[in-house]
Image 1 (cartoon, rainbow, N blue to C red):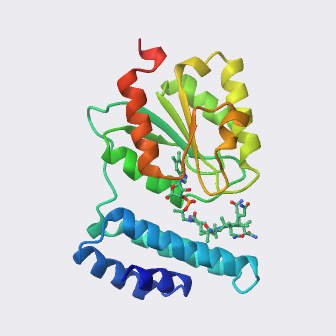
Image 2: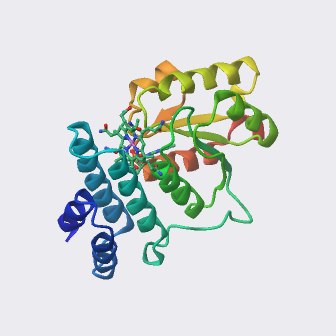
Length: 215
Ligand code: B12
């Protein structure tokens, strides 16, 4: 079943993917299993793109398919900002990067765990992240970077936060396809994970331990 989702995404068969996801949920597949399967299909789309078999319009179609999946009622991914939040996460996709699907998944997981999420959107500059940090004083800054060049802007963000004396107030978590463990030290961040659930759990642990500006 999950294998057919991977194949249908790879072939960009939108209606079939939606039908298969609905069926898989009915049969007891978890939200995480569905997301992992669609993601595996997108990886295949990415490979086709690299070899020239698919073009940019196909990448766009792949993005649309994932967005449709995220909207499905049966997956229950959307949730409003909670009235009594356990903490605030400032979220964005970094400068020069227009990919937002992974960011949306992290946002849903954070909302479901009781965080307030300020979503700045895509292609967000270090200056904008720092300006919003000054304004909203989030507990965590969560940055998604799918494009390989994102790491330099994440580093600039950290440097600006240090310069503005804001770095001790906030934790920084990095995520996304092109980010990796080594980026944590290079950027000066606190953590990295590609697993949104692990990422949100870490944010929860930070809240339990307290973040310095709240003390
Ligand atoms: C769909 C797609 C697009 C869509 C995006 C639509 C959208 N609304 O996001 C569109 C058409 C816009 C697009 C454009 C381009 N794309 Co594109 N795209 C993809 C594709 C097929 C899927 C990406 C995706 O959404 N994956 C699914 C999500 C769920 O995975 P994810 O983002 O990794 O997120 C997961 C984790 O990383 C994590 N996560 C993500 N963010 C965060 C944040 C935190 C805090 C945490 C904890 C976790 C976390 O959680 C998610 C769930 O597990 C990939 C191929 C691939 N292998 O992924 C190429 C890919 C990313 N694109 C690529 C390229 C080259 C481009 C273009 C340059 C193409 C072009 N010539 O124009 C442009 C770039 C535009 C720009 N400046 O950003 C390359 C990137 C190469 C690189 N590493 O630099 C890839 C890898 C394809 C390839 N193999 O060559 N693309």
